[in-house]
Length: 357
Image (cartoon, rainbow, N blue to C red; front, side, top):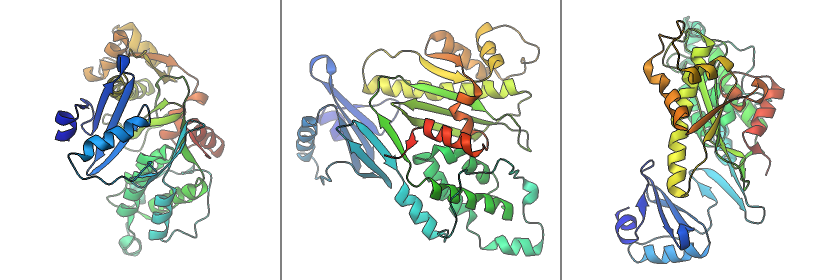
């Protein structure tokens, strides 16, 4: 890292300490980006000739192994089609390996990661000696951990289901284990889908949502998705740290969390690709929440909301984010906050950029 910064005149990103970049040429139109993971380097350049030059420069200081064009990265397979200018990402090999590791080969594919009728709760934890014995040798934590890596890597469409089953990791029961196995059934059914990106003239766009029905502990679940070049580049599904008193409040908190992620992505993009960024569009399907971010007036029903969540008002006023209403049927993040029927799962999966290459 020191060699990159001092000798090769790279700049370390302020917002991601593993990313280094260097701009050159007229108006900084030539760019080299290096991403480091332990002792592995991934290089992205604006022109292929820069790769040869960079490898020659760095080999003068450290011994390197040139593995050629990127095909695998942290168990993610990568396909680049230079003619069509597309990139496809898949963890199918990783998914196949964990299916085999936990002996799930005989599971039948299904079209949804979680049934809409499923209601998991702590009351389903094993309470009798027989049920405790049945769950004793079940590798629940390991299996859920394996699923988390898939949901974080290339499978945003299982994020809600994985987040839900992880909630019961402390004392899982048979119902929770069945829900875990269903996620594997769904992964087997989407084996041919790759997270895909293409060169299109679009800007960063986000979707923020919160679940419509509260969980048993009254904590809502927040979700956001950010899209760039036709595919999801960042997503999250997590339980809110507060107990909301209304749907408006839940959505308000979700928008604030999404805004923080939007600002981080904008900072990274502005460093790697110099130029003025247009305001990032953030979609919400709740009209009252949007109104709350704009009027800056006292509301008796919302005066209890923690002041830190009003950060979204400043971000919008500053012009970094433009909050826009969208119909629930177009809310991509809906699939990250609740269990949906098959037709909606397929629709939103496609909208996230998951498709056959």
